[in-house]
Length: 451
Ligand code: UDX
Image (cartoon, rainbow, N blue to C red):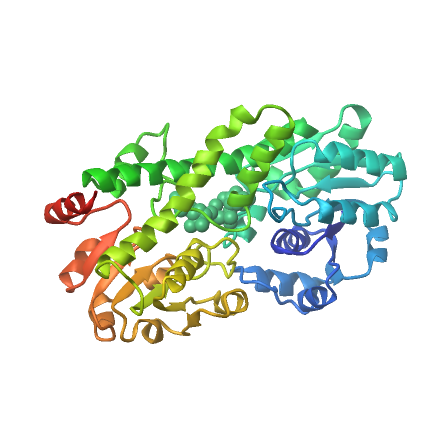
């Protein structure tokens, strides 16, 4: 198939490379010239394991190209919309200006029989308005919605071996044409037995935000249990493990800690709430407000814990923060819980140094006032308190005996419940974590400290 991918950010760049890897002729259209040029050289403009290799191998076959010239769209028969839908400034709703601008550009180049496929995460009802734009410009083109569920850090795998495919199709011949095109595009994936859900346009849009809302709810549920555990001296990790054995619940996405961040979950649940309000069913999603509130409270709790550890004030105290990315295996710092905590501590006068294996450049640009170190040793040297806030494997595997040599006081706060409390305690560290106590004595102290 001749495919265009419109918007080459996280979603589009990965989608373009993966579609070329499936054997299609793909052009990625990216409005940002520099980004298009970097991609054309086989370099991903962000950190995504496996993507550089895939870009280079696909570019070498001649089946993949990137351009900032919209004319390239004329050669494709299937067009994937992959532009971003960030949160509007000062509002919960999604900013759809990029989607509309992309469609306005695309419709100039549509031919009869072309299929336009939306992948961006949009408020329910957006696809219908895009369909109007498409059919007005080219009545013989078809529109479908095909949400993606890729996770940063696992984006290539999630695109080439997804858990499921979802097609949102229009009724009649338009839907049949779109389905045939999508089946051809995803032929090798479907051949592996990947489940396919075919539905209407509005359901397909809803599926994506429903999935992200469920994931966010699961994380906030276990973090609410963490708040309870802190009040009772219980262990939230054991709670997660024990309830996770129930297959109806499942252990995945029940990792308690600092909560969710990134470019998707926070803004998607907010946009979903805003859309529900517009539809007059805001009560149906009022629980998401609480999901959001629990999530944000974890960050404040982490700062409170740091203050408690420092005897009531962190002003002037040397604190090391391990992690800046919103999650491991990513350089994405959008709504990063780690940087939010680092910034709050800095605002309270702490002497904070942050390190991260991949996200330092992005973090420096967004938080010029924070101090950064290239290495863990550099960050923890002389620290009175070490905070693990993003669970990169290299941090989880740190040798606490070795690390102890660099710090002023061996005290660690595990914001991701990722370290082994026993190993760290045996190495002479004082260990505390969100929602978890290490010893009965600890529990007593925690209870005693509560008002
Ligand atoms: C998410 C969805 O998983 C994906 O399907 C969708 O397409 C885009 O949004 P992503 O933003 O890449 O993907 O990150 P994800 O792996 O879902 O993690 C989101 C956040 O939740 C991270 O900050 C992570 O640290 C946090 N998290 C995740 C937890 O706090 N606990 C968990 O158990 C799991």
